[in-house]
Image (cartoon, rainbow, N blue to C red):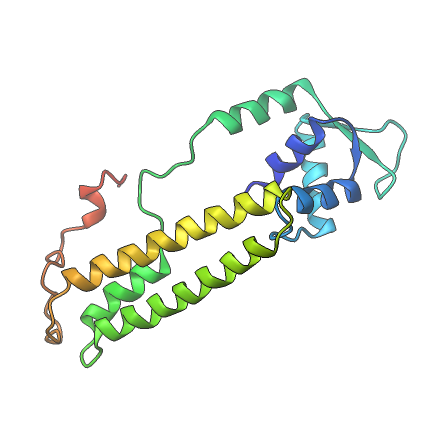
Length: 196
């Protein structure tokens, strides 16, 4: 999450104070990402240093200093909004790493590991669904955040199901690569177009 760009977006509505920016950030993100007010002011100082925002003339640092976005700040915001995130290389996903490691650990039933995580994710989906059901109908920010999390979790559950079906029902031999695992010296990330 880019706090820098979120603050620029909030300032695109008009000038605001630091504490006001914090409250608006939390409200617009469904109040799921609390933001430290110190982080707001540190980020504003950097934005001001970089010429992307301008503080009120003559105002000292603190809660009464207002900020407004500059032309360069608006260009930076537009560029950020229109630049797709870098997803060329798979992210380091702890769940994926746990399953890959479990395949290699003698005496560990990888299918049990998968089911433990699957149950946890299903419970998490149920909690998010309850949050969505209890939310005000006009709370679009919260609905979007919850939908994103539900889709992300659903994808993880589907991946766990696919992994469970793909993995052989055998215990790995210590030191031997699991069936389907890359041989020593071959990195799967290279096959996915990762940079060296």
